[in-house]
Image (cartoon, rainbow, N blue to C red; front, top):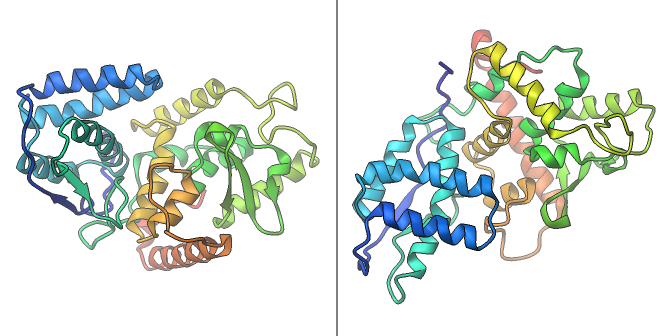
Length: 320
């Protein structure tokens, strides 16, 4: 069994009244919602994930329609889960509730998350320890120190919050050494600047590029230097480390763990949305500069390092 990792209570919520305009059971609602996702062309992995995660809500509701009180109890029950699992379950809720609210015109929404807390995890309160090691970290500690490619690839996901595909699609020229930024190719061809605030990741990036003779092409090249190694190959390697560590973890749990620790550390929503490329997270109402985000992340990283330094050696996480 993997160790439980907690970062604090579930994000504060405001549950308000709702007029029920349908006699459908929750299972029927979920079937209609899934059919709507499929009709809108959502990816099969997204549809399958949402259905699986929302089934827990259905079990909590015992098949009945969602109500304000029932949702409050359900959200409270998620506190027993690891941050990555809790974040995944909470992330599935807004889309479903927006879909549900759209079918109750003129009514107040069933649930509204607090404005300044992303709907992905805890708020970093004193009830939890944001520095405890999660299952994904236990697996990553099994990566040999000399496995430079694996250390860098999985480190980019864990410490910078890149999506696995984004990390694979990086090219040598995407690293701005002077400004310590990565020009990350995101979804839909939209690129974003990601600050390399983690010193270990920054040094590994520089060493990796030097070891590759600063050649142009894919950062993690396969047989063709212009094309990256396949995701399947890297997922297979991750599976090996997971088996060695004895935990249960998916590659994407590394990104979720970074999201959880940012949220627990009180990093503003707009910085989290910018860093992780979350299109459904509200950003600041005005314009902001890249250095503003960098300063926030530097302050968060410094506070995190200071907190870890006060922990007993047996509780400190591996620096790999």
